[in-house]
Length: 332
View 1 (cartoon, helix red, strand yellow):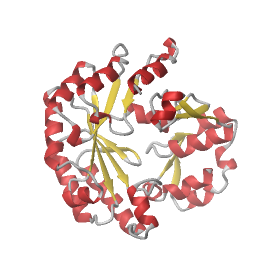
View 2 (cartoon, rainbow, N blue to C red):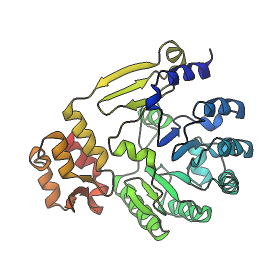
View 3 (cartoon, rainbow, N blue to C red):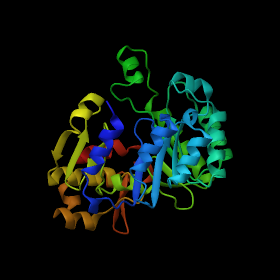
């Protein structure tokens, strides 16, 4: 079974006039685990595209100088580094294999190569974490001097180690008050470090927003190839087989034609993740609705000062960001 050949076959099914991308994002799974020969085959697919933003996800322990040189050669200009925590006990608990020294090596080597648009992924509300460990993570982050941070709250997802532990009663989630305290601390400290929060979990310096992720939050189309990949053309969502044998036989597992009601719901849920919010007049015109009238339950959130309209944008307030999931349920 040659997955690289099948990936190329799927890529070749994309019409040439659709192969003009502002962004390329290689991720989901751990692409940096590929060796340099495998990475070269992958990069060869996109060698003539020259996107504005070209990102690859990297785990610190799988980075090497040789891979960095390859990134540079093929025009990769943004790295998303899966750090999760700088506390070794927490890393051991969540099954991550790297050490803090691996992170510093990767960041410093990438900068020497001229790739300085680096994002660090961190997680809070992992069982065993405290405000003190979050403080340590942020102190270490400051030393790295990167320009983007994605800081996520731990979420229980099916088919994960944590979910399996939860089913066995071996996983105890942090209570909501502690999680809220951690999130407020993260927002405050990152602001003090010069980061702008532009999405619920994303912070940057120098306006270096993630162009690619912004497509998801703005309900813009994006193409996807590869096992387990998810794509969206503006009205249709699709995803490929995750199982490699199934993917080798036929790429796509499911195609979902989205109703207008679903697209409106998605536009609001994803759009309200952005700190700026959503342009309410544009959505009203696009979907031929009055959002405030259609979702009358929003009134109580206005009254509680959890949402507001500012310069034509419906957005979460600072208090509302903490209770975003409750607000999003209005649109489901």
